[in-house]
Length: 128
Image (cartoon, rainbow, N blue to C red; front, side, top):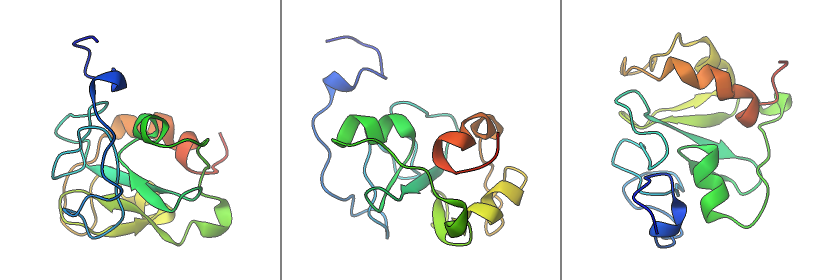
């Protein structure tokens, strides 16, 4: 075991769902605003619904750590579906709303991590 917060071996399997959230959410060391062991800055307050298992995870690393299958990206045909959760207010945003929100929740104004734009291709079927 290591002291590295991203070393998933130090955690136990999370519950099937986390009852602090209104959506089915799983991850590694998830706090009340959806920060996790992998991404835990003040602005890391989103969780994303993976279409492969219809559950929300704070990040792709959490999905890898707690599932037994490869992740799938949200297809373009589902870009109007609610798949991004604001961990501050609980609002579910569509991919389009999330990509157009200028790094802040349109409902509560909570700041979203602008660095997440670099990972959008991991979650959404966007043109790179």
